Length: 342
Image (tube, rainbow, N blue to C red; front, top):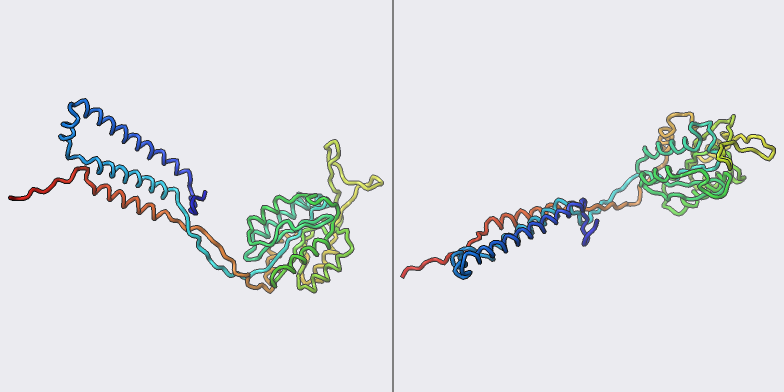
């Protein structure tokens, strides 16, 4: 929580302020009790004269100092943070856009547990090993959508990948060229740095502009990598019927439709752009991709400023200690005037 430009790590500590209120009430209760006892002893003026050495102002000051010191201690325990500290960090990296196929064919189970879930696992493993490279996420089926812009926030990237699902886009199909062109459009708007596209797909594209998209990527100096999911023998596509029973997708003749990994198409477009194709059977896909990324001509990132709040608990702690020291040095007695010789 932020209060007057100061953030507190543990706001719950302010509940202890109730202790100060209780102490104040106890002091007032004791004060009024003493006053009542003094009245019961006899003439109030005579009693006051007998207790003339006690200074009410000094007693009140001592109590006030104690209460303020307690409040400052609570503030210190709440760990206040203030004063933004800027750090300038220069990093060497590349811009990488990951393209995830969310078409229904990715539900086929010829890659365990299915193509889509396996693709997400491989993507997460890759992100876990990235360093200094900005990453973006594009989802595609019959259309393409920039799900996450280029960022160094790998935690956010993993969250977006985990939240992706089949049919995240309304238009059915598998428009690989549209996804590639979207990535290239994004790259045109960023600074001149090493750029790469990594596709996680079965390669069963339905658009005819794939080679043109590959040529555009090659001209822009963007390498395309692809990780293929599925098998060339193919597998059926699970669908849930109206009754809730899982069946397989069928054509108009009632035959089960098989979806197959198009390895040749993925190799053609990746090799033409200076990238590479990798099969999911390789258990070290992430390592292989990182090795390929290391060959990219990475350039320095634009200076990035990171700001953080600095701990400021020392100040209220020191003030509390000084007030307590001052309180201990103050006597509760009135100052006795010195006698002078005749």
